[in-house]
Length: 586
Image 1 (cartoon, rainbow, N blue to C red):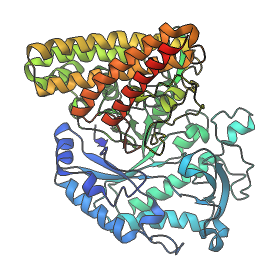
Image 2: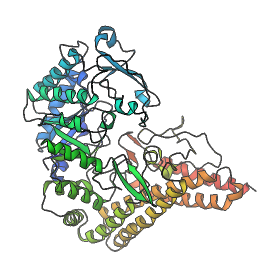
Image 3: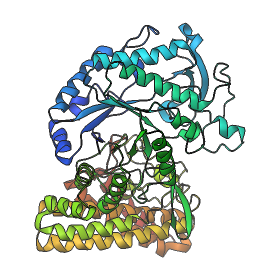
Image 4: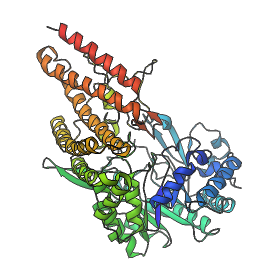
């Protein structure tokens, strides 16, 4: 596969991603990327910040600092044969109270209001791409950027995103017409007269075409990648009109798992995020792939190599058999390549080694790749590790996949959940943001279980699946424990402790569900509550030893350690106090 992109987990997508890129991509990381078989990294770019243009005098405020930084990271990465790509989400809109609109009301397009979206909260107006000024801006700024930074490898762009961009970026015209809009975006009346009669697919295809023309006018060899993420806002799957409207030299990138489904407990449910528990490709991917190939458009995949939202607060999820299965299927489809991570980046690990090896060498089988990587990392203990990985991979298929569980469940920090006997105020905790803490930096308790029983699952289903997951996961731990006793080494001990840590997170998540269900019924269920608290105390004490030695618990999108030694020590104090209180309850 020609394109194999990863990104440093130390980068900050939301803050100075380009400016700090030389520091966040240290030499050891770039050298490891090369050694593992990758040839690209990516950075977040906002076009109106990075270059000046004639159309809008307000733009280009960060040009010098960002252009200088880009040229430096490109020069540094080139030493390791690593190319630099930029992420585009254009044209980025402005909030309704921005001074920009005082001078540029003629390009103000469709509004959209965000609520409960963190820093995005507020009403935004799109930069209307049916105006010549905005079209000229997209062309000229794309061209200027590639003139000023001639070493750029290319871009990939999202055109249906959380960010408000063009007039149809949050207006699913075809769904609203059918009264079947279920994506959760707020409904707004469509007020842009310029775009009202236009087909949304034509608007998006035009944006991609203009940016492509601007870039290719400077560098014909640059890769311009259009990502089909959330194009179901624009047009029904598989977006045939939109894909067939793209220039042939565009590379179409599709989500490998999104739009798939799997069955657990005789229930079928949709996979609408990156996933190791579902190996893909989804029916949606295959349909978009077929439409693109009809027009001779190249296709690449969006996957995750190290972690997914299923569990992000670990360096990697050790399920190489699932990853190898994905890469093998991708090779059979002759894909152009893949983007191997989203905002939270990709740690260097056995997982990245397997992905790079298999995507660079089409002849190596998945079993051979796993064996070789295990041998590379664990030497004479490699056979035991591959057996353990097989158990872990099998266990992960039981993951109770649902968007509420991924986005609002506590699995990333479950071992430090404060087990208070009194029911707390219910609120959801977004998994990708810093944890809600009080003035003493202590995690606040929430007994909200809306994440645990989301359709098609019941709470009982989730407990069942976590038990099944844990049962098989522990078999993998046993394999590593046996070899660690006979032939101890730093590498095998670290792999074992990672596995134990993940097992604790799974088990603690189950405890949280069971505990929250019993709050309010404590007098009638003292034995069950005591049993949960005692087991959770045991986990916290063992976790403290692991976290002291290894940097587990870091969430690279929230840029925060979700689990610290101090958190665990406080957890131990809380549980001991609750056990004392429990003994006084009649």
